[in-house]
Image (cartoon, rainbow, N blue to C red; front, side, top):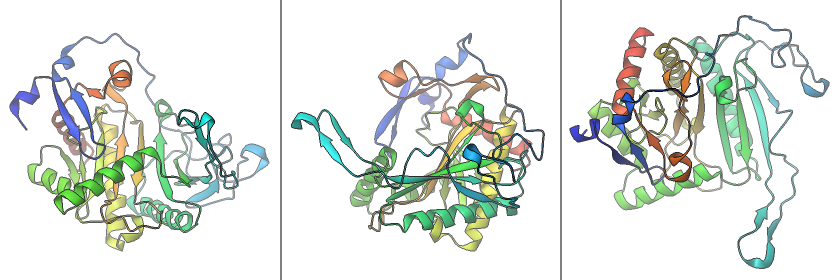
Length: 348
């Protein structure tokens, strides 16, 4: 990395979204008197009789969960998408300004474990492998439906990131249309393949592995990096070590390695500020729109909000909303902090 970038404002290009992020490392010395948050606390009970995700408990509308002993999937009781939504398209006055169209889809919840007090960070790797298998099953089940063109698997961890329940769980939203982030990433990867004859994220992973300064963790099948263009302070990306378009293409060994790298990075996060680390995490497999998409590379985004301590978070306001993304801590500094946390967690 250019040494001038370590101490001076500069812009970094995100080729995956084809946008810029402003990096302002000199701002790390500024005093902070802004909002703090209450630190997250681990769930204390293995079973919580008031939790609507625990085995046997009642959910909204009177539905009772089964006495599940592993993963458990159900249709979200408050789904943002409905399979029977009508398809329509409107353009009032034909000016392209007041445009709307119907959107159908499905939303499911996947409980990772029957135990209320666990997270990916403290689950055993074989148990996370069961979650990985469930993700793959859901991805294929939803993706084979003619009306579904994208399957977005994600987890919001912690109240700071909007999680309504501490029970270990994630969500799966399946859309008829491709979401905006996917459209953006797909276009960038297609253009890069056309221009360079190789996959964008395959080439990027090779460069990061060679440089090492932003690599946090790795195993035989996956690498965790703080992206060169990261926006969130401790943002990371999981990248495969080979061209891998989606979950269905993973070998048995790769699924084991994927489970292990998920456990390692979430355990690492918890050591940064000695607190259960909040984040939004999402898997980005290739779309299900009838095309092969040879340019697509499977990857995982982690977007954690914590900035300076367990109670100080990053806000996307002001310039970030009105201008472009901005960060203070350089990705290289963040990667070193995460490597030290990984050592503390016993992952390095």
